[in-house]
Picture 1: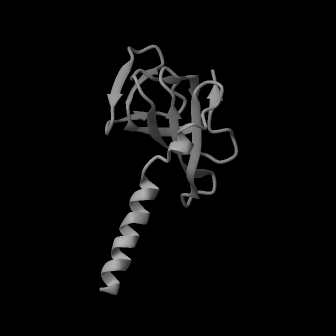
Picture 2: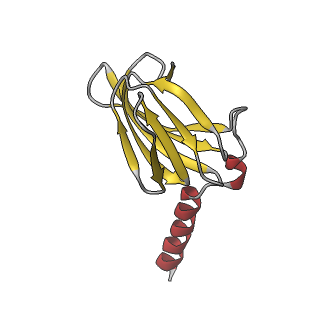
Length: 135
């Protein structure tokens, strides 16, 4: 019985940690974007690291053209996002879809849905330089 209660409590704590807390969703900057770094870790190479960032977008919010000093994999956690890479036509992704963005690719991201949208951005980047470089 005690083990059952511990498992139930653990499940509740875990599920609460995986949902977006309403107060967190309101911490947007002036452009309607909130960035939360979830992990930063060496990858066994003295010159590179892996960084994961949750990026939340208010309706209509856009992250302007930029690059990264490494590769990005963007996974749409919630909503509908539009990405434009270099001068290619925009790509629209729904919840559960992802996009590979090669190092140095100029790109932008925009929430094109009616509600908030979120992505989980995973970077394998050079240590030292800023992760986001405006273009």
